[in-house]
Length: 80
Image (cartoon, rainbow, N blue to C red):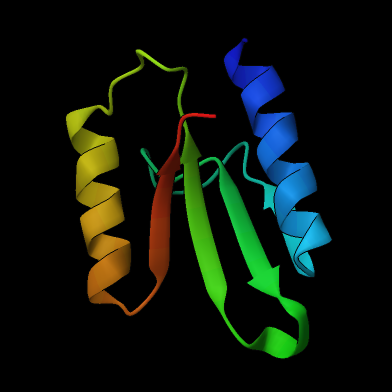
């Protein structure tokens, strides 16, 4: 399964759980996760980094995930 297929699967899963999902393409911060999922009625925000089963996080991706956690956001690395 390709990373794009895994990403589509995760988007469908989150949308079925009442999240509004946005695929982040260009941001002002390198290493920001691929998806942002906002729970219905703004009950929560989840940042998701999608990786192929053997894919690895870069150092900047690890940093961004920790940074987001420090700001109170939930983060997840999804491998399908």
